[in-house]
Length: 288
Length: 288
Image (cartoon, rainbow over the protein chains, first blue to last red):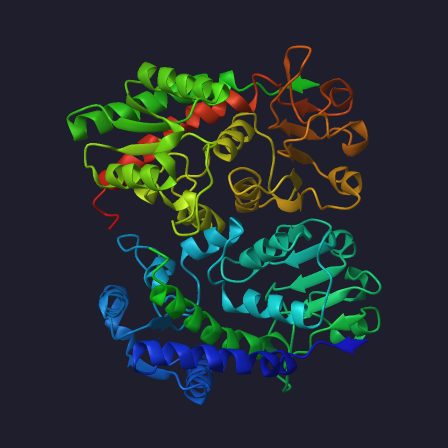
């Protein structure tokens, strides 16, 4: 069994990304600027935001962090994000999830707060829709990272049977659409799926984004299949594990992403690939 | 085997649609207005547009047909559609497909020409994306009609295995997303799928939107399955048939849509359900 690690994919893509960022910086006559809204004091969110900030700084992107107390409320945050949408000095915007409050029905859905043109997370429905129509400009960072990983390791997709476990709007859903765009046949499973193992065990490629620790064992896997594990779970006894029981599945699969060190780092990397793609599109006068 | 005809679904939904149109007409102080662009002289397109016009008129919708010569060109049509987008006297817009010319890369993709707020076909990617995120405002008329048909005939979806053959952005793709939203497990197949029959024959619900006459025979069908046939093919010897070999599949399936008389009429009906939904959303000040 071979490991499909994320770092070699990042290493291979970083020079190209730096070159594109250079061009964008020259055209803007300043570094591209990412505005990050962090609301409340969730420790995991603080760690993630710090990872993103560090990566941005290492790439020469100006990362402006706006920490806010939960008391800002949904309407207050929405107003600040709207101002950032309209600010020509802000090239890209990110709202760290989860928020410590619900969004009331009187406001647009959270996915539509950041304007599509500045949405590095690619959570705006127009990005998901363009992906579904086979012409994505950017796609959500986790599926974008997985597609880059599959390409890097030359995992064949055309005509192959791919199974995605999970259908979240931010991961499972765009993942399925991206695989269809590469001519894979798609089985999409979720918590309501009956006879899960009977379906997953048919797949040449199994992408598990269920958010359910140890959901997938060797009985769920076709011998020789390629496994991508999107799950991240902190074990009470220490260490991080995924949705896949790595020991037993590793004995059956041909190739598998490690947890940690697989999909996770790619997700952070793709924030900045998306950022440069959005700025390039904005600077490209052919796109009205 | 029971037939799942479209007309009873339309008959059941029309009173509600008329009531909603009444409210909208009162709020607008005029009938809602649909602008239809018909380019070139494709006979099938002329028939489809006339069906839509008649149905609109019977519902009290003002249908303004704009016939154009192919010489208008992509840029000319795009300019006219943009004007209609900005015209407050136009509530909804439809561009009859196919166009007699290609859209050059210098223009936005055709799906994004009609603004999302006036797009009765629901072809704009933001509509597909909202569907993928589980919160559609409107969806493309064919899948919308099929979902209404499945609801009308109480076809169970939650936890069932549904297979969609076809992944076009206007039919197969939104169909799959709509079935996932109803908690079906989804297999999405297409022309690159290997071992098609092995997959389709597992499905409790088989929706065929392949555009390939007679593609699906009894060997593709699980005994007792529900079959929805989206195909429309004129036979040289006369008559209209679908993607499914109705005689042999009818002997295996439990329920099946007829061709003609199944999905087709529902597609036209849903243009006007989408129209009223869009106008209601525009009049609803809660939606910014």
